[in-house]
Length: 424
Image (cartoon, rainbow, N blue to C red):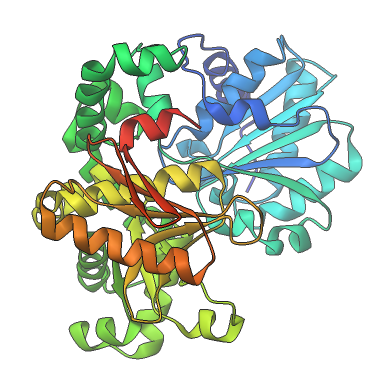
């Protein structure tokens, strides 16, 4: 099929203008991105998490004028012209009509183009242009990408906003530890809003719950059903809602198999689809035995607290699990290695991080430990885990309580979640 070159010129012109937008909010990931290396840089994460904005922020940071090409492959034009050659042709058209010297290529939602790897590999080998990619599939993070483009690449995960980024969007500045104390009431109010609206940028700015429903169905339809040719939409949706409803819980594939009357293979495949599309993340059990760790049941968490609350009233009513999901997402945004832990008595500790280094942390999450029974339950499992792992300190993250609990030579620090999130 012959490409309409004039139409492609219009498409390029439209996206070039959109790439120079100035009304953008900073994202934390920008400080980590290596813009000078020769390796391909890719940003991956769920739809509408801000990947396009990160590309535009890089364009702004590098102060680029007219020596870059930015394309978003969700444009309807590329649905009609879906082949790897269209990427190369767009570069040639840009050179002919805009600027013969293309130093940077920004290819947004690259997974929309079939066999895109061939074109990217050819551009990398045949030009000096620095290439940035974004995609909505976790496969872009994997070793699979290295084999597809036969070379190293730098991957960065773009998740919905952290609480610190949420405050930036809300124009709330926390400059030092003093602000954490003096602005405590404001921070608590904003944290309530964060739990209500989550971290998808447009949802935060527009305060629009309907967008969350649209995002949920977009992930199912565009990132799973269309990509993997899943025919049973009703079953896929039911399982997705079930997993979101049970965020922050241990769920077995066997239980899903029985609940939905499906084969083990189908259940396992659907769960992988949800993870690849960034609808859900899982959390493994920590064990010194790799075999035991791989066999153990996993906990599942929503990629966004508000997305899970919007999908399930049952989840939204369980404030403790909502809080735990928020803490999980904070840990993921920090890039920490993360597990849950079970004591020899079978008592669970929500999070164990730093297992491979010196900065080990055991963390329980509870909305409140003012109730004596809750306090006893949470501290018992934590003290036991500290004993088994030969650790002196542990932490309980709560909605708004701060305290220190001591037992023999061990100490549990009780912190309010929103302060902890801002103290990194």
